[in-house]
Each structure stands twice: as C-alpha cells, then as structure tokens.
Length: 135
Image 1: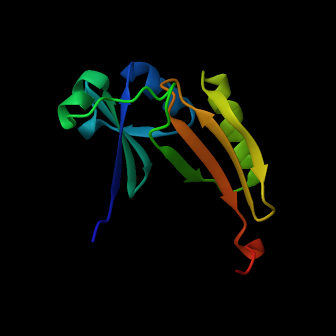
Image 2: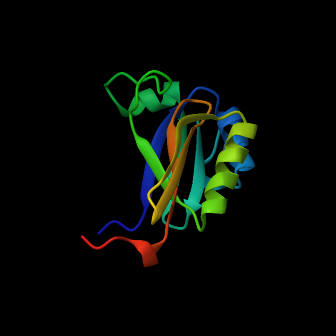
Image 3: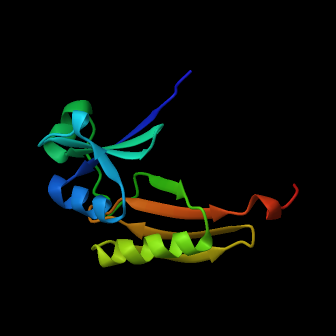
C-alpha cells in the first residue's frame, strides 16, 4: 500500500517556481532538489516534484503539454478555513500567479483557483464536514 504521493510537474524556470511556492509558504526537501528538480513538501505524505522540462522529458515518451493552453491535471489542496483559501489566492496572485476560475461557494465547500507561473491549475478548497449534505 502506498504511503506517499509524488506529483511530477514540468516547469520552465525552476528558480521562479521555487520562489513562487516558497512565497506561498511551502518548503523544499534539499535531498531531492538540485538544478534539474525540486521536491516541494506539501505535507509528510505529499510531495510535488518540479522538474525542468528537459529533465521531465526523460521520464516520458509523450509530448509535454503546455499548461497555459491545455489542462493536464487539476491539483486540489485543502485549507483550514474560507479565509485561508482567500489568503492563499491573494498571495498566489501577488507572487505572479493568475486566477483561472471564480470562487465557488457550495455552502459546505468553498473553493477558489489559481494557475502558477507555468500554468498548472491549483484548487484551494475548504470543506466544512458539519455541513456536508446527506446523499
């Protein structure tokens, strides 16, 4: 059974990507970070490997999609509150990210979305378990 998740994303400028996510409060594991790749720690079980495109290409025979033009994945991270969702979105745009969708309020779930400088789409979501509707 898997105990950790590693998400691999191609990036054009590794230093810019690291600065962006450092600005959002994420750290990087130096053991798995060099001039070709950086290991962003989301939590003790989830990591995002940011790989410069030339290095990323060594892991696949397919074309790398341009995340500014096509959606290859939606990355969703939870937040502790609606306020944390908004704070993250505000900070992401201040750091050079962009909004790609308006916030959505479903009562029990609130989400807002940004794209990082490489165009990867990130959903920040707060869910109130006490208000989840019964199916």
